[in-house]
Structures are given as structure tokens and as C-alpha cells.
Image (tube, rainbow, N blue to C red; front, side, top):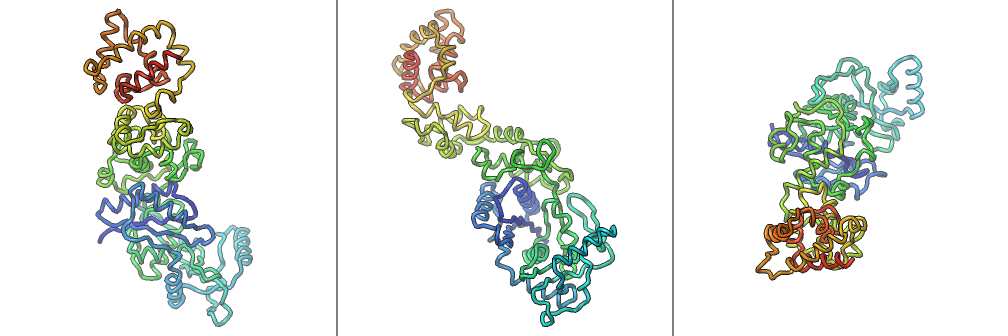
Length: 476
């Protein structure tokens, strides 16, 4: 039997970290076994579900490279199917009409609480035999839950789990407005889609015994269930926006690479020894529900940054150069920057200098700015100028300038080692250490006291721009 998994988001909001992790685990489980991964959009909440959220969820899954096979199933288009199965349960005696009002049901529950019993519907319509022609219109349809016995299943994450049937309510299958409920729709969909394994958040644990009873009522094969513990913030409280519970596409905006986020989410509740960094191929080959933890995971932004920095270092410069323009365009100072050079070849020369230093693509965009403006638009840090462009430093730079201005056959501006050798010869002749010109030259070229390698920077800037910046610094 081929394994089939699914991800079933509700489009009442964007795809967040918890949902993305569930989708990833379900995708990995299918791919590890050579099976299929499907997408179902649970959009039965007509008031809160939006097309914008649906599109954003699909976009986020595509960005993470978790695209499902085939076309997505939309629950809002399947109400007739669900109701036909509810009618089957009514006909087989596994369901019944209930005319009790919500107020009456709440009174039953209050009475049960007062008596120290489980607060639930007391089943007074269970054997009443109501049918549509006898005043049942506008009522709900309830499932006839067995009143004795146990419903048990072997959770792929939590292990053996069992619930006394007497503890469960006679759940509503069809609301008074004719709409099917979540538990019924999910069972029908999973059966209809051929789902064999269901991995989802542990907030669904209470639903699983109810759904298993529905499978049995239909005489359908029950899939395997697994429930992944929640994600907590660093303070061990429920993950919220202040911890990093943002939509997946917000992480893209913040400059994270999809492979970094996938790697991080995979390790958020799953492990393979002490290994921290996994290629996509390794995740597929190594994934097993046996290695899923049954305790909540803690979200750690610093670890995500560390992984992202690793993947930025490993990425092809041409790929990052293709991604950078969208982040450069978001820089606050971009509007005042004249002469921006955003051609791919120039960006591909800049990127290798920044890969060892940037944790995100936003940081890389900010660092790249000094390479993209001409000397007239370069901003100089006033403190850096005061600290490092003192008279003695200016004198040395003035003497160095003719050397850097020498004919191209003497100094190759495509060879940073040649620039370094020429500078070192100048210093040796004066019995000076490199630090005598290092920071003054850095401030002159970049306006800052921290930058990529000086001579690599000069090579990327080119001869004309490098000389122009040194001259402008001397004139400050």
C-alpha cells in the first residue's frame, strides 16, 4: 500500500510556523516512503476564510518547496458529498436528529457538572426517532456514540492512546443551518482522498477517537494518526508574535532562505543523532516518525539565524545576486542613492565579499549599499572620520594615492593581491605596520570602520571609484 499524507490548513489567516512544520513533517513522511503528499483547504468557515489567505498559504508552501501533488481539495465545494454521508449514517442508525436548543444543551452540561459528571449532551433525542417530516427540520444531526467500550489507537508520536467511549459526547455532524461539522468533513475527505497517515498538531488529539468511531461506523479503514506537540517561545509560554510566530512569508521578507527555514523547522521536534544541518535529500532519507519528540519544542530565533548564515555562505553567488534587488529596493536610504548599479554581474562580484558576514539577505542588502553608490553619495560616519582620518593618516593616504593611480599595467585592479603587495611595499619603505593605513583606508573607501577585505573591496569598486572615494575622504 502506498502511503498518502495531507496538509489541511484553514484559510482564516496566513501560514504560520506551526502549520509549516506540520506540512513539512507530512511531506517528509510521504517522500521518505515514496508516497504522495496532498493539500486540502478547510474553508468551511465562510465568514473568516478568504481567497487572499488561501493564495498566501499556497505561495508559502511553494516557497518552502512543499508543493502538493495534484490539485487542492476545497471543503467548501463538497457540502453535498458530506451531507450524503450524513444521510447514510442516519439510515444505518449511527446518527439521529436532535431538536434540543443550545440553551437546553448547556443546561444539561451545567447539571452534569453540578453532579460531578462529565459535562455533555444527555442523549434525550437519541432514541426519539425524529425524522424530517416530524418537526426535525432546522434541528441538528448527532452521531450515536457507543456508550460502552474503549476507542484506542497507537499514536505515531505519543504512543498507545485510549479513551472510554462513555466519556465522549454525541457530537454534532450537521448543524441546524445544514452545514456539516469539522469531524465529519475531515473523515469523509481523508477517506475519499485515500489518506493513510495523518500527522497534525496535538490540539487535535481529542478529535481522533471521535473520528475513529466515524470510520468504524462507515466500515472504512482507519488511517494511522500522529500528533506533534506544540511550539513554545523561549519563555516556555505559547508561541506568539513576540517570540517569532510570524507568517512564513514574513521570514522571506526578513531575508531568510527557504532551505534554512525548512532545516530549522525539521529540527524543531525531530532529530537524527546530533546532526543539525541537513540537505533536503538527507531530510527525506532520514525522516521517521520514530524520531519525533513528544515534548513541546522551543523556538529559538538565534539558531534560525545561525542556520540562515550557514546557507547564505553555501549558496551560489549568482543565486543570491538574483534575490538581492528586492531587498535593496526596501532600504530606507535607497531613494537618495544616486547611480545604483544593480546589474547581475556587479552584484555577483559583491556577494562573495558579504557571504561570510551576513546572517540574512536584509543584512546583505544593507552591506551591499556601499558598493552600489558612487563616491558622491557615500555616507561617512562622522566618528570614524574623526578617529581615523587624522593629519598623519591623511598624509599617508596622500602619499599612497599616486601608487593607486599608477597605470593599470603596474597595478591590476582585478587582483586584490597585487593591490595588497603595492600597499605593503609602500609601508615597508617607510618601516610602517599595516595598521598605519588599514583603518584610514577602510574609512575612506567605505565610510565605516568595518567592511569586507580592503583590497577585495577595491577590486569590486574598481579603480575609478576607489580613487574617487579616497580623494573625497581627503577633502572631508
